[in-house]
Amino acid sequence: MGICGIGRYQNRLRNRPETMPRRDFYTLPEAAQILEIAQRRLLEKLETGEIEGEQDPQSGRWKVSKQAVDELVSDDPSAEGPTDESTEQSAEMLRDLLDELGNLHRQVGHLRNRLDRARRAEREEREHLLAELEQERERHRQERERADKLQEEANRLREELESERAKGSLRRLFGGSD
Image (cartoon, rainbow, N blue to C red; front, side, top):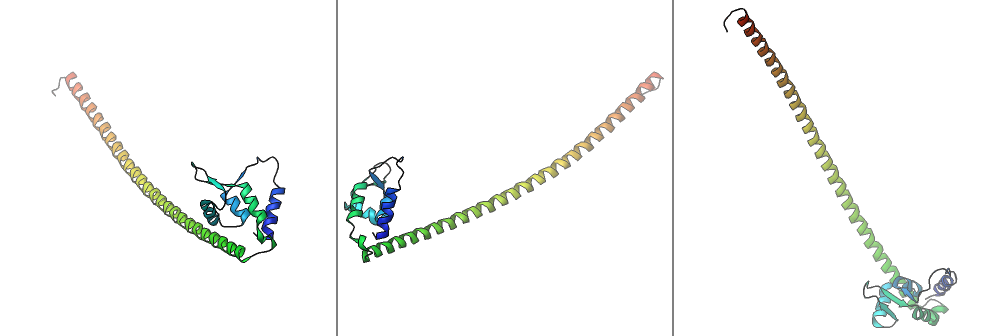
């Protein structure tokens, strides 16, 4: 860790609000940031026992001993200035970040494509449903016209029937034959 890294770490410790609960551990990302090493490298050190920590059996997340991290920071010989190792670690962290950024860009691209496909499918479905609705409306209009014509025809026939009945009643009244 370089001079800047230790200074930032010490400032973070000094500026920490006292209202926050004190923990005796760091999360993996916190410890990696303080130690200025890649999370992958820190994970290797935890698994080999180079750094003290424990893995939560339920979540699988690591808790890195705060004391171990603090000791590594205070024992860090690179406090004098950057070394080839810290430069290599910084380069490794940068590569990891670039890899992660590339993966995120790909994921965003995939999600955008899925969203576009979903929007297109929704638009096509909406157009299809609107066309079906219009067809149903036209069928309904035609059925209504047909029903109106049939009703008119029924009324006309009823009137004819009533007229014929009236004629027959008059004939019987006046002595005519049916």
